[in-house]
Structures are given as structure tokens and as C-alpha cells.
Amino acid sequence: MNETTTPQAERRALKLRDVRRLLEGVIPPAMCSVGADGMPHVNYLSHAEYLDDEHVALTYQFLNRARANILATGRVALSVEDPITGVSVLLQLRYERTETEGPVFERLRAKLAGIAAQTGMEKVFHLRGADVYRVESLRKLDPVHPLPAMAPRCDLAAGVRRLSEQLAEAPDLRSLLQAFTTGLQRDLCISHAIIWLLDEQRQGLYTLASIGYEQAGSGAELPLAEAGLAGVALRENVPIRIGHMSQMYSYGMSWRAKAEQLGLQAAMADTIPMPGLASPRSQLAVPLRARGRTVGALLVESEHDQFFSYDDEDALTAVGAQLAQGLAALRTTELVEEPVTAAPAAEQAAGGTPLRLRHYPRDHSVFINDEYLIKGVAGAIIAKLVRDQIDSGREAFSTRELRLAGGDLRLPEVQDNLGVRLLLLERRLAERDFGLHIERAGRGQYRLIADGPLSLTTEG
Image (cartoon, rainbow, N blue to C red; front, side, top):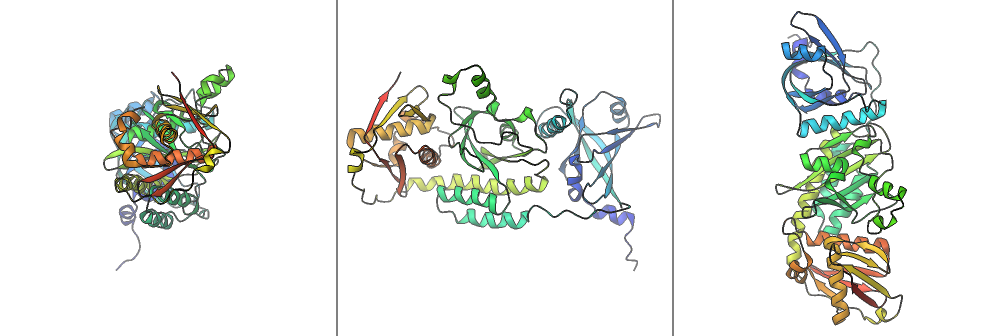
């Protein structure tokens, strides 16, 4: 039996998934098309996009001869190179269609924007469409002088397994969130991340947690239209990744910077500082889905170019789905309440610094001692709890009574996760350290602890 590998056997063995990192455009892919008259034409592309094991998408950027050749013959050859090993792969492709909107188009447009920004070609590179091709064959070309392989950042498969095990053991929302953020850093070697949750009523995102930033930004809000890469990933329900910095997808507070330049300090009085890198070099946003719904997005970023890969997309999609399912599943435990343990003496509230709260029912903005705390559903909750404590002196409350007051609190009917809102409020109060705290007293039971006398005024 002849054990020598034939070219035909190699083509059968080599899968598109095996070479997808070569498509990133670190070395621009070369595309060769042939006209109806047999004349070849070569173009260099910014990058190619892996779709599945049989399809790739190429950028349709220019009206040129290559475009005419593609429409005439429907066939192109694409040569891609591995910047790490020096291996080249030749792909024979057959044109199927052009997409001008949707997930594939948005993925290509995001990467193209990052490459254009890196090369100073923002005004030149304009994506007209995403050309989808079927891969008919792949052939590896051995390099003359192979380069040594680069060690991976971490073992992603093992990291996903460890993180998944920790998420599966989380008994409550607080533990789930802690396990996830710790696992991103420890197991997946990701230093900067933001967990955004969707507020359907307000059509925006709010920060549940973040890691790696000077400002934690719990409760920070962004309209979906201003949410950058996270907003696109959520809208299209696909991972979106950029390997180079792009202002087009910056989720930074551009409107906030403009307000500062114009001296409009009042416009920023009721905003929470946004977490995030000032100049990220790589970003990856993954939608968080649970029970058929997109509930938010995970955004990770790095100060290094091309930090994230297709493997990171797979890994974060897997653990992100488990996080979203955990958020949805643990919500049901809020309906089962345990007896409240004995409350501590409340004499402490008689002394200490007075806590003066102002509540604006229009958007439920809440200020403590003239400093902004939070707005929206979380703002409505803290205003109710403070009002109840002033009226009755009662510290304890339950999720059940909050749900019964849902109409007054404007709790959303869709994706109502009261436990998440309370956790967000607890984290925000801890960050500001006003002397007002929420602590868990049992399943479905909480206390609002004030270090000084409370007062509440309703404005407007």
C-alpha cells in the first residue's frame, strides 16, 4: 500500500476551518479572476471572511475589471498566506451571490473599517457588498523556508471547559457574574471586557459588569445606535470582530466629548462614566442569547492589534450563551422566598451623614447629596425602597413585593430580570459609597441599609 500522500488526498484532508486564520488579511489575499476572453487579472483584497466549512465572503469594494470577470465567469482563485508559518493555500472559488445587508455584510464592513483606519484609507475603502463564494477546492503550497509556529495566547478549549464548570456551579446571580468575569481573566487571558444587557423598553444597553477599567461603569447606558460593535452584534445576532482600531465602531462617549467642548456640563450631570479603552486596537462583540432571545452582548477588547481570532469567537459564543442561560434560569429562583433573618438594630441610621435623595419620576433619575446615582428601572426601585423605609422604618424587602409594585416601577414585561436589576443597583451603590447599601438576606429577600438619616424629595 502506498502511504505517500497524493495531492488529491491532501485536498480531501484539508478543511476550510483549518486555514480560516489565514483569511484575516495580515498578509492581503491575492484574488485572480479571468475574463471571458481568457485574460487573467489579479487584485489584492483587504481580507476574506470565513462563513462555514464550504463558503467564504470577499469584499466588493470597487467597480473594476475584476468585478466584470466575476460576473462573466463566476470563478476566481484566492491565494492566502500564513504570516506565522509561511504556508500558502490556494482556494478555487465559485461565485454565488452578493449581499448588501445583514450579518455577513456587517462582519465584513466592521473588519474593513478597522483595516482602513489602520492604513489611512477610510475615505477610499467603501464596502459595496459581500460577495459569497462556494469553496470548490483547497491546496496547500509548502513554503521554501517555513517559519516557527507561534505559541497560542492560552489553551482556549481547556479555558472554556474550566469556565463552563464554574458557571454550572453558580448558585445565584452574584456568583454567576463573579465566576464569568474571573474566568475571562484567569482561563481565557482576557483583560478588558464589558457585559451589556438589553433594555427593550428604552432601546438601549446598560452595563451589568466590566473588568480591566478604571471606571467600572455599572449601570452606564447607551442607545443601541451609539453602542458600536456591541450594538451591531446584538442587532445582527452574530459575533463581530475588528483587528485594528476603528472610530466607525467606537462606543466611546463621542457626544459626551462634544458636550464638554461646548461647555454643556449639565448635559452630562445624569450620566455614568462609560467603561472602555480610550484607543482599543482589537475588539470582539458576541451576542448573549437565552431561550430564543438576545438579552445583551459581551464586548472584549485589547490594546494589541489582531488580538482576537475565530477561535475566540467560538469560545466566547459558547461561554456567553451559558452566561445568558444562567441569567435566565436563576431569575426563577427569585420567586421562591426564604424567611428573613433577624434584622440588625437600626440605630445607626440616626447618626452619620444625612443622605438626601432627589427622585425625578420622568425618567426615574436619582441623585444622592446632589450626585447622580442611576436612572430607569433601578432608579425607580431605589426611590421606592427609600420611601418605604422613611414611611415605615422597615429595612427588609422582597422581590415579591417589588414585582407586585411592577406597574408603579415600570418593570419591563419582556426580559424582566428583577434579580439582575437589584444586583446592578447593589454594585452601583457600592461603587459610589454614599453610605447606602443593599445586602442579600436570603432567597428573594434583601435589606436596604443606610449609614445616616434618609430624606427623599420628588422633583417635577
